[in-house]
Length: 296
Image (tube, rainbow, N blue to C red; front, side, top):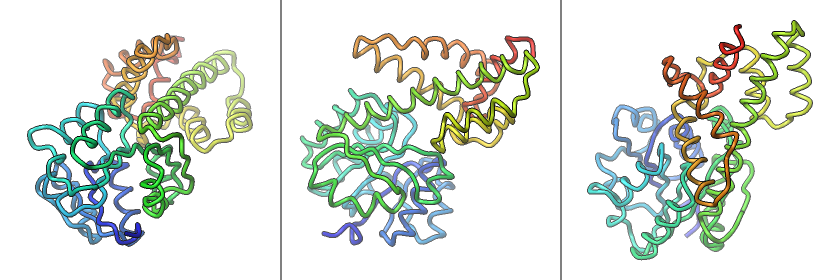
């Protein structure tokens, strides 16, 4: 079956999931959507997607199921919980996991699908919803090569770049953790440098320009601008989500017997930010804690 004729189910319609759904519809894929909060399905059903009342209903005719969920617990519950969709899948149906989850969770999903007679592919995305709207995400994918080849057209509906990182699905999750950890570390460093320069009365436009020269990737440029402007109300990734990722970094690194020093430091600042009610702001708002601690 060519990818353009695949029936797709999308489960999880947060900011990123909704944009993925829009791009999939633009790619002319038949799409069924499900979200626990039913009203979040409306933007996609108005564009032609079919809404489902349960995850089982969403996947029953699907060749491909994409999950875009908050954390490991949500993914496992959606797949194998009391209302999980695993048992409702067609034989050889493909589950694409896009969530940032632990490598160990990815291994569990691979085994569950193997036992069920379905296929698990980890295909994490790099980029924010604005990038996804342009179809310019980067997909980091791992799993069975032939299956991935079948999915190329679907990935290209929302991604401009596809990077294969291995035949074991959990390898994609390892790479995504590496990239998110780099970004979290860079956000903290940018915040410290802006604060240091500001306290020494250096024009922040100078630091801003130099950052753009050093960090050429669009993701870094986005946060360079947000932190300088202190624009945290426009949320690409919530501070609450960043806190989730920090805990995931710590667990993943500990499982590999590696000390995540930067994550351990960042955890304290995220806790302070959460205590101050910043959970719904962009995760780069954690840099406000550095400014506060410096007396600004």
